[in-house]
Length: 213
Image 1: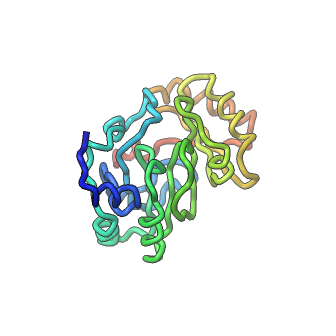
Image 2: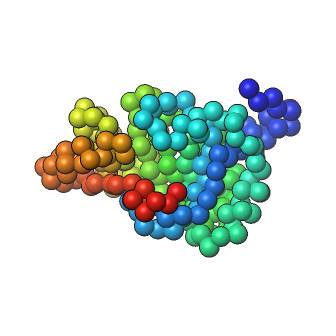
Image 3: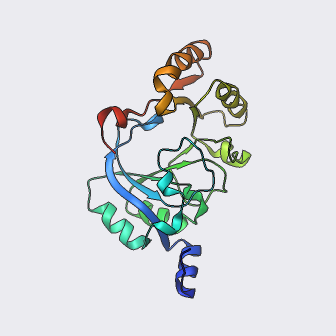
């Protein structure tokens, strides 16, 4: 367990320090904004605990260095990125207002990727909620979503997706995405479902096909 000074604890709670697992410039590979260049900030810490998660190393926040938001922003600004994706882990475990406010002041577009299990904090141009059965989403977060992206791991996930599609706002985009290890088996099921339910769209992890982060 990480031991913090009083000043560090205050800075962490206020969002001035954040546990950053990794940050990198790449191409957004999933969902509504697929294909755009974006700078990713992946925060450590998650208690949602999906057994098929492909970034389990993000779960324990204590394993990742605490970095000041000034440092995070300086590194982001060293790239050509015009868009920032804040992801995790579960990023809304932290107060994101200081980081997102500062990034917005730099003229950047800010995207959020969240399970929706925690209350909103911060200022975003696009909110992707990807709900998980292991710790379900808040209704207020579903209503804030610009994009609902449901990961399909087995056939019962279609019913899960339809349930949450009734709780979103009128303009929310709907995506079904196969869990990567089962893509070959599940993609035909998703295609058939989307053809029968055309309010949904198919999302693929295109970055994995391109072999980029």
